Amino acid sequence: MKFTAIATALLAGSTSAFVATKSPSSSSTALQANIAVFGASGLTAQECVYQALKDGDSVFGLTRNPANVVVPKGSGGADADKPIVDDKLTVIGGDVTNAADVAKVFENDIDGVIVALGGKTSDVGDSMLTDGTNNIISAMKAKGVKRMAVVTSIGAGDSKDQAPFAFKILMMTVMKKIFNDKNNQEKAVEESGLEYCIVRPGGLTVDAPTGVINVIDGEAGSIPRADVAQFCLEAVKDAEFPYIGKAPCISSVGGTSWVKDRSASARGQA
Ligand SMILES: NC(=O)c1ccc[n+]([C@@H]2O[C@H](COP(=O)([O-])OP(=O)(O)OC[C@H]3O[C@@H](n4cnc5c(N)ncnc54)[C@H](OP(=O)(O)O)[C@@H]3O)[C@@H](O)[C@H]2O)c1
Image (tube, rainbow, N blue to C red; front, side, top):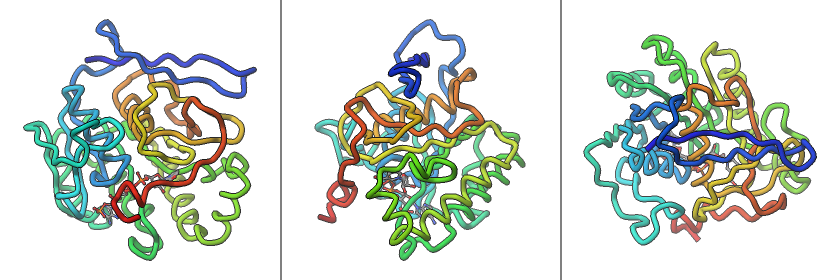
């Protein structure tokens, strides 16, 4: 199944809707690709893995916990949380901060790379995002892989003023170290010379995909991880993706208010 990306200006030019529609006639999107997903057990990364496999792509995922690569809640429906069984899925157990582990992914012929790493700095360290992404960039360059999508966050880099007020407070306090790492990660990507898209989502949910992704110039709202994943997959598969070399803030249809992060309950932690 091929995808066609259509960027349409909406809402007085302050927001554009990235509408991904399945089309059998697209010529700009690779029909089947080999996609590397870093942080493959994560809630957004699971969506990337699952949706890519559904599209017929081959997926090479890296995570420290391969058993946690399961069918995602948003797209998975009744199969959510079951193991993903697919001949086109290769999960490599490893740490992204270890260059040798990252190199194992690139032993395969990779067409595009999605980086959806995350975690509390108390669990993953102060610089995992930056160190890991630098390893990925080095490996991509060594292997001639050009295209990457990197999930960071609303509020990172020059999008600070697009974060809702309450989230800004968190960014300056409890999330200060995370945002320092995210800012350094973004800088590494921007300076990589690769065909990148830095994807800055608003508040993430585990809802079903809406299929419509608003690129927001103003304050961002919430978005299902399933829609973020679709945007990332388009970014690495569509030769004419309109946000290459850019860092769009994205929210879903349904307003611009921040919603409570439900990551913990999605992981069975609350
Ligand atoms: N929560 C929100 O509302 C929100 C809003 C905007 C942006 N974001 C950002 O969006 C991104 C994705 O969020 P998410 O909640 O979907 O992610 P997540 O569920 O926290 O997943 C992150 C993944 O990163 C992996 N990881 C951490 N350290 C690693 C290492 N050293 N080597 C390999 N993998 C490692 C973890 O896998 P293992 O532990 O299994 O290795 C984990 O599954 C994050 O950067 C997050 O900050 C979140």
